[in-house]
Image 1 (tube, helix red, strand yellow):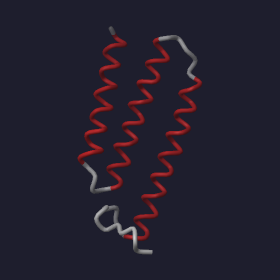
Image 2 (tube, rainbow, N blue to C red):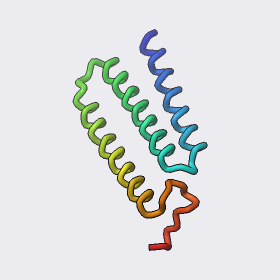
Image 3 (spheres, one colour):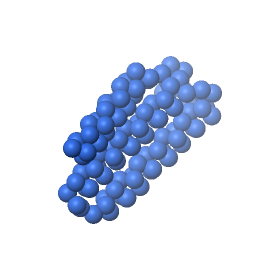
Length: 98
């Protein structure tokens, strides 16, 4: 029963992250934060799945390493965009301008 409650909590976390990602598409920082929240909910679901079947947790470390790399890449894109354009609005970002 407890596993079912935790699984429903992680599904609600995932859906709320997807909702925020789709609603806050003006700012890059809000989108990156919602993506990290989605990754956190996926990590929680993976951990619950591995805990339920008594598997090893080595794959969770690999998942965390890839999620940290994804976060660092998004943060570097954000810093680059703020340095070149002055803000993180997608409306002010023009691909054709060098």
